[in-house]
Length: 111
Image (cartoon, rainbow, N blue to C red; front, side):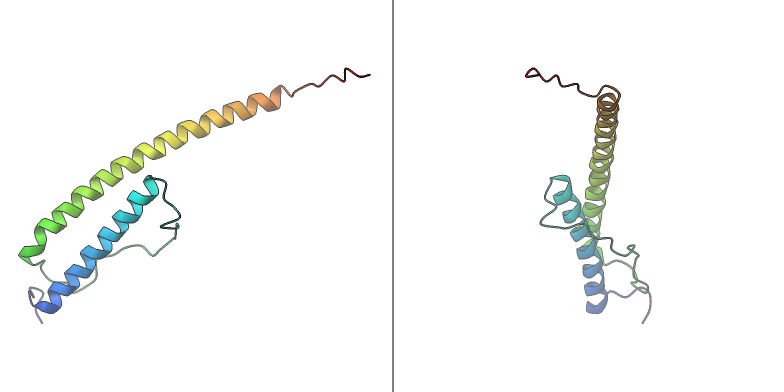
């Protein structure tokens, strides 16, 4: 079969690829919203485009562009979340260091 296949087999292969990308975006969105119970973190394999997919059918191009826009938005949100987490970690480390430098002193007033 040629690499330009547009038959039902090629269509379903492309549908599976796009379904997989959309699922990853749904997981990312849920994690960003704090819903890690719905999608527990898993170190899955690196995503790669399956070989011999052929040319994407015209009727899936809009869906692929929509996924790309969602990926860009997710990347922006992930970068913002990472920056905020780093700022909070720095703040906690600063407070933690201050607490250890100035331990609390307790005075027994009964003695």
